[in-house]
Image (cartoon, rainbow, N blue to C red; front, side, top):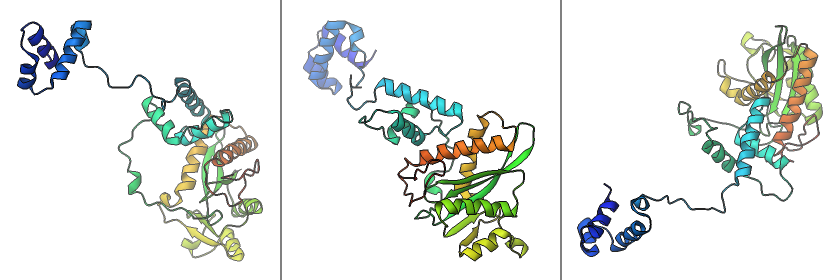
Length: 304
């Protein structure tokens, strides 16, 4: 028997005074009187603990918006895109009527967690333990790297990606059967024609990016030296240095996995172009300073 029911029965059935019960059990008389009133209105069931949750909250997100967020996340996952709170916030901003207040990223994240769509990963290191760097200005540093992909017929190809370290603008994504030294220089110049030259270019120690470990120079190093651009390479076996471009590879591959398998390099390049356009437009709402950098596909600046 719980304490409330005992006190009610002691008064109603046993006839003990309320003041005596309150003093003996260390509770206030008003609480006992409330219990007695609830018992007389609804019997023993009315004595059960009541929820303290308010019946309504003017700040609560409407159910139809919560349902829309859940459906939007399912669609993004199905299409192979990032489906985190920031990406959902971008899509909601595009779809909502003008004048409708935008939901914050933190609100969307709480909704996803409440709906069981965010899986805690306690095995991961906390963000506070990571040493993170970011260029202070657009075109201060670019990152580039090559990742592998497989066509529908089993043929292995390579994709060279390039990203601005500060604004995260997707500068270039080009597919090759095998990336050669001249291909790297051509992709770099194509990006520079649209966005201007960077002050620094960061890459790993791939053979097309550097020959310093072999005490020589590749074509890219010679060209960067001619242009007065600092050439940086990550520490061997330490991909975290180029973490932004590595993360971009993951996002791109998740998207490609959800698309029809490309049978030719031309079809794959078309898929890359579509993703570069989507990624560039999504970053345009991130609030990062673009410094005049424009999305190649639509001319939108990251941060415009």
